[in-house]
Length: 92
Image 1 (cartoon, rainbow, N blue to C red):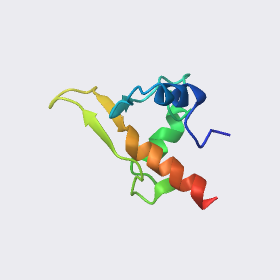
Image 2 (spheres, rainbow, N blue to C red):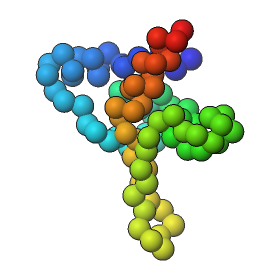
Image 3 (cartoon, helix red, strand yellow):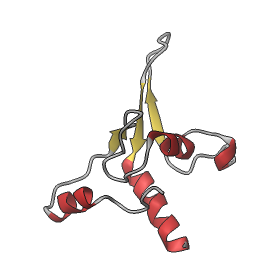
């Protein structure tokens, strides 16, 4: 089951006064996202319109893809992700 709170590494960075980035990339298929500990598949459910989220993604993201290109880079708005996870924690 994925963690619903920031990872210990992220908490340690915050306690040292290091700021968190505004946007983070999706992790590779085998890695976990550093700040949330979530896998790529679960993050995709949270940032892309799909049946699982009623076609209204709860987490903000942006796509960096030039016109005419097939590939690009999707970045997750980290604060939006952490606020979503905190709201889920409070709801439980």
